[in-house]
Image (cartoon, rainbow, N blue to C red; front, side):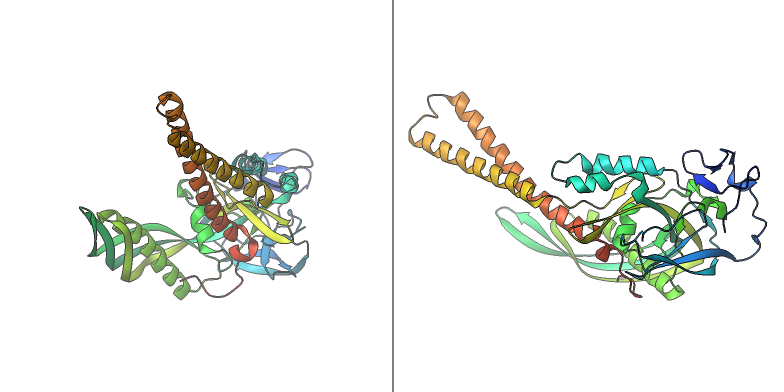
Length: 384
C-alpha cells in the first residue's frame, strides 16, 4: 500500500528522472530505501496490493493508492473498477523505471509521429496523460540446454542450384535468460522489448511501485520450463543458421531438451504503455522503461500511402516508356549523359517501389502485434 510523506503526510510518487520518491504536496524527496512503511511486513513472502479489473477485456492490474485507475492499460477502455485488496507474491527484485513519462512520449513521437501518413488524431492523443507505466513480471533463469537440428539449404553450382542437407547438435549452459512471466503479454512483444539490464536491478521495495501499475506472474513450473525451452531453442536456432554456408536455409526438424538450474529469480521490469483507439480498434505501443526502446507501430492513412505507391508506380512506368521510345528513336546515342541519367532514375524508382511494398508488408505484420487483441491474449496457454 502507498506510503506518505513524513513532512506533510502527502502521497509519495516514484520519479524515474531522480530515482527518488517525491511528494507532490510539499516537494520533499526521499530515497526509496530510506522510506519505511509501518504497515509492511518485510519478512513476509507477500505484500498487499489493490486489484482493479477491466470489465471490457477482463484484465487485472495491480496499483498502489497513488495511481488512479482511469482506463485499462491493455485495451484502452475506461471501464476499470476496484475489485479487491489482495496479497501477491513478493518478487526478488526489480529494475526501476528510468525513462520518464515525458521521455517515453518523445521516443514515440521520434519513432512514428513525424511521419505524414500517421493520422492527426493519433498524434493529438500521444501526451503524457495517456501513458501508463506497468511493471511486467519476468523470471531470470539458468538452464542446461541440448539440441539437434536437421537443416535444408541451397548451394549454387555453376548455373544449377543444389539442395543440401545438414545436421547440427550441441549443448549450451544459458545464464540469466529472461522469461516473460505473464500469460497476458504476448511472447513476441516481450522479446522485442528486451534487453533489460540487470546491472540496474534493486532489491524489491514496494516504494518503487508508487505511481505505477504492476502485474504478477501467473506461470506454474511447467509453463516456465516450457517457455524456457522454447526461448533457448530460438537462441540456439539463431546461432545454428550462421554456421550453414547456404541460401534459403530452413530448419526441417529440431529435438531439444532443457534442465532449469537453481531457483529462477522473480523480477519486475518497467514498461510504458500507450493505448489508444483508431477506427474503433484498440492499439498499444510499448516503451522499455529502462532503455526507451519502442515496440509496435501505428495505423496509417491508407489513402496517403496508396497514393504514394501509385505515384511511384506511374513514374516507373513513365520512365520505362520513355527509355523504350528513346531507344527506338536512337536518342540514347545522341546524349549518353541524359541516357545514363534516365537509366539511373529508372533503377532508383524500381528499388524504391520494391522497398516500399516490402515496408508495407513489414508494417502490416507489426500492426497485428500492436492491436491489443493480438498483443494481449487472455488465455491460459503459453505460445509454443
